[in-house]
Image (cartoon, rainbow over all chains, first blue to last red; front, side, top):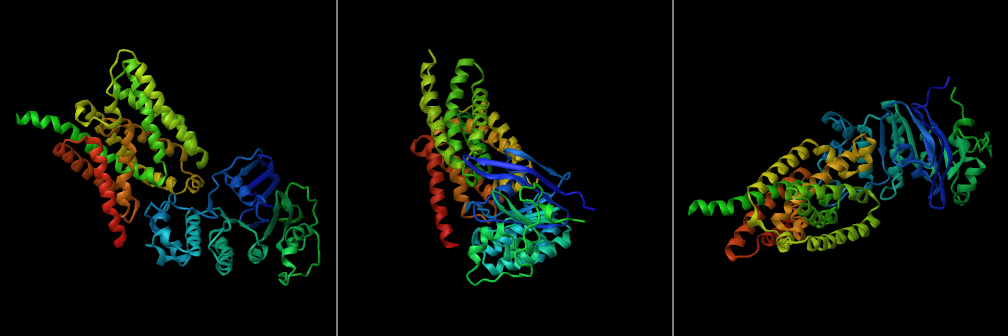
Length: 255
Length: 265
């Protein structure tokens, strides 16, 4: 029996000027599920995220959320005005309904208690990312949305963060939607991958997707110069669902 | 004799101080949100409010506040629109309204208006009525800003996160802009249309170097504003210079002094 999805996107389309950014995208997010959106730059990942968050209205299609769904969002980047003196603690206290105890708890949990009194303008990319994650967690989210940072975070820092995700999911019991341009960084952390390039190219279990011709078409050429695939048991096992099928988990059943 | 002396400087002084107090936090938001130009536009548009007041026989201060607030409502979508285009558009609206205001005022038949007074302020012409208006607006501004401080700050830091967390972003924007419109309209008599933004921006800019947090910055900005008004008015009496510009010059000097503090830290 499949549970009710906490968020269902149905046939989302969005056009900016002449460019079709989102083309009939449908997806379900189940409770406690970790989903990763991957795709090359400009494939519509961030736009789709904004639509799912309700920040951008799609031209057509609809989004059904469970009632009062609490979403925690870690943005790609959050440029702050230099002229506002603000320390990490004050920044986190701006989270709606946050409490002193909750702020201290997440500072501790993410190992950034030492940053508490530091100015938000003096943080490194990795530190700032953790602060933004803490802000997202303070919402006590049922859905945690993590956008990949655009700058200033090294691969090591990213890996550490992604290792944390399944733990956080278990602690909070929340679903997670991650956005990445690199499947291999997030592979071990994710339950399901949706490969995006305007439309949904393929989706399913990470190992399945990494062998999908549509995925290889998008990413394969970048990888064949010596970087091995993580697991390669199912040689070129194709996605077993119709690519025009609106629901991305069609090839991936939740029984 | 002494009584007479007291009354002529007391009202302008109180008006200036009240304005400085509310301009501290409001100006800080203007600085943080990069709304300086917006404040300018509101001030320029206020001239239209005067014409409106002259033509309708409404209480001039009320006409001014209503005119300024309507303009703010019209401009709100502009402010929220993309930054780049908003810049040009605000420029057009800003200088357009100033010009229209000047033209309309000259056409309003048979009424002599002291244009210099509106452009550069006429602090000494301030009467008890103005002071009551400023008292009311300062009380409203301080109450609302204090009550909604966290929300206003959250929306300023990141409207996106604030919206996702479920804060009423549009209402908060609206509130801030209307408070700003009211303050700008009432500041006109004190420093004049052309210098209103200066009074909003300079004290927070000076406060920035001295403060460790946003709350502190807003409070120090009010103090800097108060000092500017006191010193500016004193200088104005001492050397017989126009009061509004004297206050702004003082604020600017305080800003320059604050820069040396920044060096030291």
